[in-house]
Every structure is written in C-alpha cells, then in structure tokens.
Amino acid sequence: MVRLRSEEKNELRPWTVKRQYVIASLSFVVGCMLFLLAFIGMRYGIGLGKLDHPVLNWMIQHRTTAMTIIMQAITTVASPAPFTVILILIAIIWAAITREIWRPLLLLLATGAGAITSVVLKNIFIHARPPHALMVKPYEIDYSFPSGHTIAITTCVLIVGYLICSRHTSRTRITSWILVSIIGITLVATSRLYLGYHWVTDVTASIGLGLMILAITIIVDKLLVKKEEALQ
Image (cartoon, rainbow, N blue to C red; front, side, top):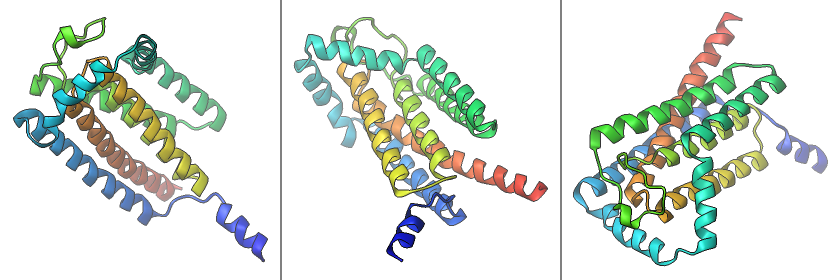
C-alpha cells in the first residue's frame, strides 16, 4: 500500500486547468509589480532606484581579474547572437526527439517576444547606461532600461520549465525548474551589474517582463491546446 501511494505521488501527470490559470495569474501580478517598482525607481530615483548607484559601486569595488573573466563569459553566452543559436539548437533537438512542433515553436516565439519588447521599451524610455568609465570593455552604447540579456534568460528558463512541467509534472521537476530559473537569472543579471552595463532597476524590470510573458504564454498555450482537443 505504501509503495502504491509512493508511485502515485511520483507519477508524471499534466497540470490541471486550474493550476495553469493560477500560475499564470500569479506570474502576471508579480511581474507587473516588479516592473512597476523598477519603472518608478528608474524614473524618479526612489524605492528600488536608490539601489542603482550603491550596488554598481559595490560591484566595481569587488571586481577581480578571475571574476571579470567569468562574468564576461556568462554575459557573452546570453548575448543576442550566441543565445539565438543556442535557442534554435534547443528547438531543433526538442522537435526531433519529441516529434512535435508547437512547444519548441512556442519557446522561440516567447523568447523572441521578450527580445522585441526589450528593444521597444529601450527606445521609449531612453534611459542611459552607467558611464563608460565604470564599464568593463567592450562598452555598450544603446539604452539601458530594461536589460535585454536578463529578459532573454528569464523568458527562456521560465518557458522551458513551464512547457516541461505542465505536460508531465512532479515535485522533482518543479523543484528543478525553480532552482535552474533562480540560478540562471541570477547569474546573468549579476553579470550585467558586475560589468557595469546595467542598473538594478534594469534587470528587475526584465525579470518582471519575463514573468508577464510567461503568464501570456501559459494562456496562449492553453487556448491552443483546448482548440486542438476540440478539433479532434
């Protein structure tokens, strides 16, 4: 009896509709709150904005040669060109193994939406990056708010985790998703701050946007799956 209960707990089952909508709602609300806090901090220099300069100064004071090399490697992997190649490879391998198109395509579309959102908002808010004197070369010259690298990794890890866990869930998978998301997002966001390319408000806004894109992705995925089931 104990063994049967254990097997039932470990059985991989898809998420219920209720769970998907609850997670989508929480993600959207938390994402909106983070973005709003970051925007207010960026625009008016209050709240979260008060951390921008102190955090950057702390990062600069604690730079070392070895750590700089590590942070440059992390930020390079999350740069547009390498990250796009990695995403396409993931999508191709995923499609080849599972013989499905929708989930790999949804990953690409969601991550692409994040990149476009970042570019559009940068040119709307026109917020300056930290001075070049505080950056580690090579300098970045476009606008700062939000962080494109951070929104890319946030969107990617959240969407991949959702697409895997929502179809075949277990405590181990959900725990792994949470840990990988925290580690991946933290590493990329920290690298952008450490190298002097962004402010705290920039990376916080990107995490918020990533959560909002996750919420929208969940809704879109659920509606299309429901439509597909109706056609069958």
